[in-house]
Length: 124
Image (tube, rainbow, N blue to C red; front, side):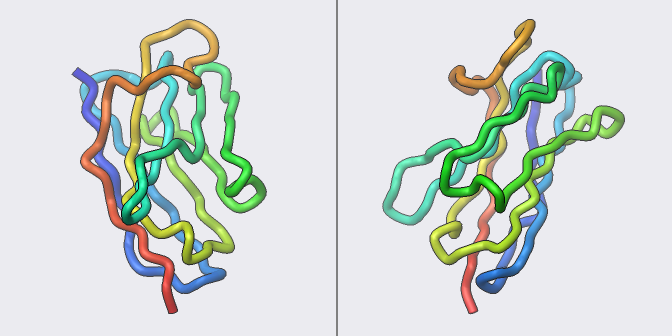
């Protein structure tokens, strides 16, 4: 059973940077799509970025393109979200989700596995 645990959240000023980490246990992420979702106060959870680990294909919502980068570390079985030039509207609970195993592109599908989420607050 795949288990996901997020870390690295906290308070960051506008324009600052933050790295979120998603540690996977129980299963190798080799054939999984791993995504970061966020839920802003009063809004539904929505996808932010996704990576298919086997192909290294990535996708982002328009709002974070050029500011956020999703990546993975095979040896550590982890996925990261590097957040740069953050804005107050990036505030929310960030969740790591995974779909798989699947051959080929594993993003664009519903996530079967979820972490518990971590708070990110962008404020002065």
